[in-house]
Image (tube, rainbow, N blue to C red; front, side):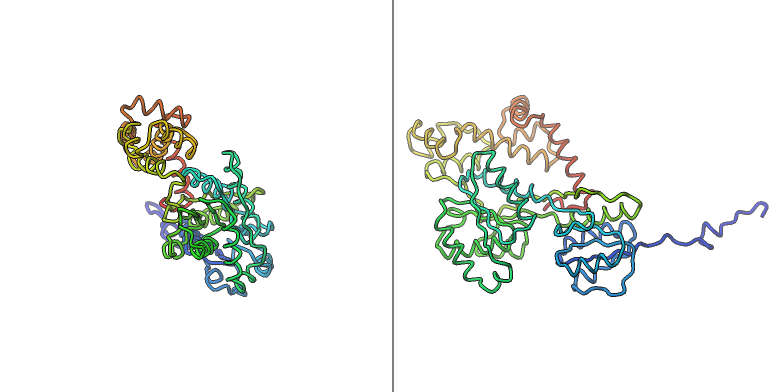
Length: 405
């Protein structure tokens, strides 16, 4: 057609719209964060997402599609998904029949150890019921991080099955009370999840223990319906399930686009520790040391000197010095420096404040003194640390993570 342009294909004509991929969520347990992470990726890539099975635990008989994201813990679910014969990526960790996207459970354990060590704990235990790979990896991270600091970890394992736990609840509480009586205090207990942490809270309160002064308790999963409504609010480590769901869908999308399935599991980093009442305590025995330690933690950004701290403790300088080292393991000056660097790392990673302002807010007299102290303790300059932290946040965003938790 001279002088005319054929727009039939450009406008629509006989052109077919791009195919929408049909993807099934085959989950043996449901979490809104996981669902949201998968759903965000599905919407970004125009998938048709079937979440019926995840929400109802009913197999969608006759379903035909292009791929599956799964969380398989039951053999019948494994059989159903295998029979579908489509690319599948799993996050359950119980079976190795499919490519896997797993949580970094080892790092969860490391975070727990760091949290307790920052609060000066020296007596530790790990409470768990299941003994799967998840619990083993979590325990290894916790115990190894403690061991590197010269600390041991007691193992509190209930040796019965979960069904037995449901039937013999009071027996579990009684067993926990016996174990808590045997262990030294103040005790720091890390639990495999928030449900088991709630059992420790009940047992400790039944014993008359003060939480967190006698027994500090940390869960995992950050289930707010549990953590915020126990008699003592529960500190917990976020599992970053939204980010996990997004990464799960992302890996399936890569395979559906022709990518080669990975033989080694992809690992998704956990979120942060959400500090609540159950661990919000500095574990020291000497009341004078506790007063001084609280002053350092609460006023790290102010000019602090030995005279000011000594007046609070109302003991001689030498007595305070010796008691502090015995209880905390380091001199007061080193503890103050440690807290200032810790707070500086938080500000550099979470705010856009100029480096000089961060140093000022953390109690340093000048940018030079801040940069020197930070580099000596962290190994990189404040600016380099901020750059690394932002790269990590960008990675979390790419995974669909909830940056706040």
